Length: 118
Image (cartoon, rainbow, N blue to C red; front, side, top):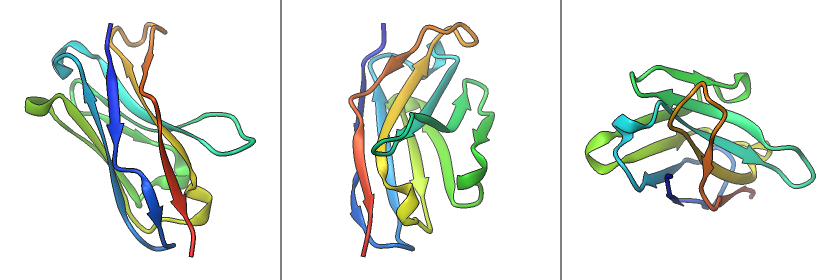
C-alpha cells in the first residue's frame, strides 16, 4: 500500500504559478509510475502528467510547455510546477501512484484545490 499526501494548492491569478507536492509513504524507487490527475466541477477526472521510476515524463496536450513534473527521491516526493495558469486549470488535483505499473492497481491522495481566478 501507498499513502499519498498532497499540498500546495490555493488561489492564484491567471498567468500566475503554483507548485504542488505529493509525498509518498514509501520510497519512490518501489513505485513504477506516479502522476497528477485533476477533476474540474462537473467533469471527469483527467490525467495531467506522469513520471516513471526511470524519470520519463508525460503531459496532456493542454498543459505542455506550462506544467512540469519532477521527483525528489530523497524526500519520497513528486512535484507539479504549474506556470502560466489559466482559469480552465481550476480543479481539484490528485496525486496518483501505480507501484506495479502497467498494473492497474492505483493509490490516490486526498486532493488539493487549485483555483485560477482574478
